[in-house]
Length: 235
Image (cartoon, rainbow, N blue to C red; front, side, top):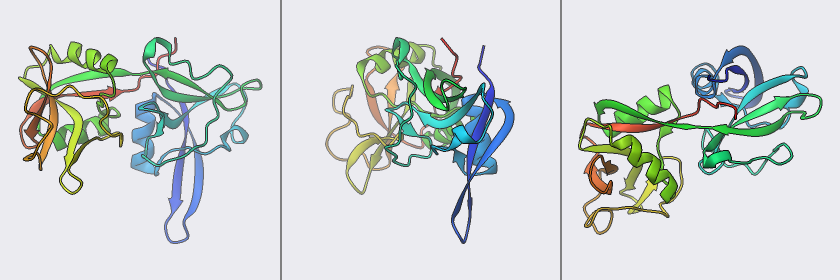
């Protein structure tokens, strides 16, 4: 069962740039909370004052998710407020963060599980990116072999020969990068892909059959795609 709880959101007053934090007393899962904040305010909060702003015995979503731990609006912040013994990254798949407002935990953070969602609709890469960010969290980023194996299992059920990943080539800087703002350290390119020239305007996809290698394709091609989703189920 998805865990639906209240959440904090950020808001900026344009012109004077005053940062405001709002408590939204609505029950939503993490991705629903993120979408609500981006539509109505600015984003889920990353502020360290929320334990003073709500009653004890409450859990509220904040804008931190693991990929590797970063804020959902892509800003850098070194602030962390983990509960003792957290994060645990249970089963290697806890990539969302919740703040627990209790007398003992006092707003400290816990990590929760995320999922990969194969969308069996053919869209361009940009359409897929927008879909994932509107309905889930983002296009999937593959940072290691374990995530690659999860992607392979999802890709086998695709209705297209390839499946979009959150991988894009920068024409200006001439390198590949993940939409999660991480550089490409781990890779699984098919022979002749990912290196050399001719990738400007291309994005990365994974084969849905065979060895599930990555390929460089024009972003205008229409393929199935894999989103990261944070239903944030408790263990």
